[in-house]
Length: 298
Length: 309
Ligand SMILES: Nc1ncnc2c1ncn2[C@@H]1O[C@H](COP(=O)(O)OP(=O)(O)OP(=O)(O)O)[C@@H](O)[C@H]1O
Ligand SMILES: [Mg+2]
Image (cartoon, rainbow over all chains, first blue to last red; front, side):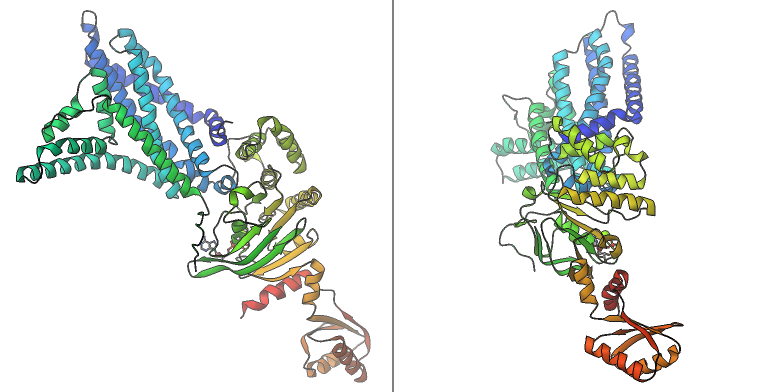
């Protein structure tokens, strides 16, 4: 049976005129951005086309879409639980047979539906790029799957804050700040780790053989960083190795994943973190915390 | 069916529910009465598994609500005192959504929803948007919604609050019909007479404690230990008052043109002595009758008495 919360939200979503207006505006902006890029790289002045430039246009569009989704998703998702609370419909939901998990997953699915709509609606614009060539459809499909996983992560963050912050506006703001926080925070964390490592290395406390561990640690930490996430997509599309080059430069080693691309790794991390966030959210909305036997208050 | 033992709920230092004990028998319609802030909503939320208690337990069919709430969700129907609705849904979609939250198979939903909308008299509104309904209709819709999974026990928190007299009557009609559904119903109100005619049992809560419970008649009998007597006289009520004022067992004397009323906290023997004293003092008594306990009076007495304490 389809998740009832998702089914209901879907019904409401397609009935909401604002969704269609928003969709139109979004497409319009995306089209403008694409047009601008194509103009900037002066596509018509070439004899034929330059596939490299098309790739750049594609990646800029993809990045633009990632960036906009990073802010759109919290805006539509942070109300998921707090909105029910504000509307005084949450109690009615909590007494039903739906588990906390079903409720938060239904809410996340609802916001992913909107993301899906935005992606599908932007397909025609991507089609222009496919028309010029230079971007593979299979690559695009993989990127889209990745974008959905990324949206899942951002959405889970917003759902999570929606369960602990009562006011929707505050939950939205905190979700956005949190994402900006991990963008800056993980960057700083990596620099600190690298600095620390290099100092210890210089002092002779650590040997060079630790460089791989530090490299792994860095990539784990920055895997939650949206900018790194975007770079991993660029790397996979262009066949470059920006991430490893930067990290290996910083710690002077030659660490890399042998069998998997960075964005695969990031996707796995995002899925794990999303599940964890949703589990926590499901716990948060439980009105009565299940007491362990033998633990009494008083 | 439902049993509450030593229930305590505190908000900070304030004790909203204070060692409450209560029992509701299967099939009864239990009126849960108390003034504003008595702790009705708090108690009912704990019953419905929406709030955790600090001490004590609520048992439904022998199962502890705080431990077995998942097993009990099918049995409990709950209607909160304040609630919202989803605006962009039609009445039948609204019901369908909640049918979904109880995982009722799609093919069974139409009949269930039809019957419930019929019950709450909203059948001709099924294609209306929920936010276009009047307050009374919304409240009836929510009642229907709390019945969607055919619960055994129904917890209704002030279902008629905030309604105009006409909508109240309509709601009452629906509630009366619920009696035919053979469910255990707990219904709260801060107005006793509103519940008296439809309930089989009544519990009175004040300051988080159950101060009385039983059938409507039983409660009246408990109260009528403090009896109110109306005395009609041919003439000279002042004389009667003068005599009554001398008697220690008599309280609360009120004088009207042709009658006097007083309260007496005593036995039948004492009352007959009061009467003979009046007569022997030459007061022309026409009638000397004990007043039928007025429920509102009783209630004011029961809850108001502790206000000064
Ligand atoms: N979340 C809360 N935080 C602090 N105090 C609360 C909270 N909820 C209720 N109270 C207090 O607990 C007491 C009992 O409240 P409750 O809502 O259970 O009363 P009630 O009998 O339902 O009253 P009413 O007839 O007004 O609905 C009140 O004094 C109220 O102020
Ligand atoms: Mg209340």
